[in-house]
Length: 184
Image 1: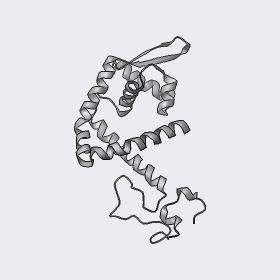
Image 2 (image 1 turned 135 degrees about the horizontal axis):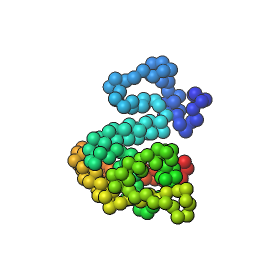
Image 3 (image 1 turned 45 degrees about the vertical axis):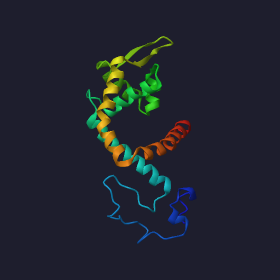
Image 4 (image 1 turned 30 degrees about the vertical axis):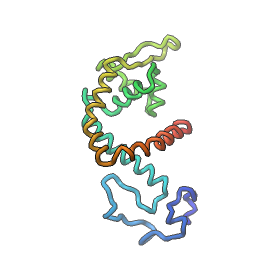
């Protein structure tokens, strides 16, 4: 057993003592090789799991960006979506922390949304160095139109995979996201 990998992260084949197929460096299996780098079956379980999430995120983001109206980027849509989901006002620092980007990057993104009329920015009365951001009706509408533009893609996925599979996955994914939010 490789001592550099904690036992809970080892692949099942490694825990059972089974050797890697071929050599210590696994060779790609062309039958299971995907364009977005599917992990090898012998990779640790959590690596394979998060590798799948990363691949799904990249593929979904590309699909969503092609469908987004109003020249919205995925990042801009994400900001609008978070405002609709959480409501209220947020400071640029809070937003940058939430999206795990720098404050200058969030400032630039918010400026573009403000220029398009999707958000409103005002001075923070509690801290003159800070600004508060909120979504406008136009921003709510843009988010709604974006979701409607994604409907054909969503419908295609629903028909291919089935609502039940999405319903079953959602509680687990929500729980995982909440844990990651709490534990950084």
